[in-house]
Image (cartoon, rainbow, N blue to C red):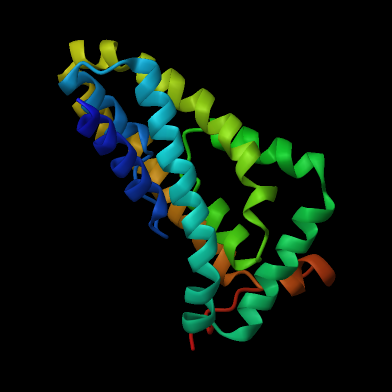
Length: 197
């Protein structure tokens, strides 16, 4: 029975360690919980732990990846955004909790934090709060979803889920292609697509 919980942990970790907008980790937690009839609270705790570890690893390796694929100017811009985020203190933490509660991919948040070299301890506690609440709700709704599988399948292909994926990609594009120095220092909106090495 322990291996089933290990699957939950591994699935949540893999969903949240990738640097592209992937479905939320609860989308692997819920089916496994239903399939194996697992304890709901253990699924939530183990799944959230896997997500946290995945996001932590993402923040560690993304600066190395960013240095290899993006120009130095783009990396400096994102680090500048990170500096502003650090200066906002508790307001930044509140934004992270709120963002984690929304049905939006949190990948852009962690890409920005990793590229900006924000220490994981400055972002993960707030993410944990939002993640735990949102995953707890999602997993508890798993029984309902299992009873309405056809509705759930059509919802996965709905305009909301597709819109969420598109929004996540747009947020990453904004992070990468907006000239943040120009916008925040000179108040001029400018796009820069020459960011790759």
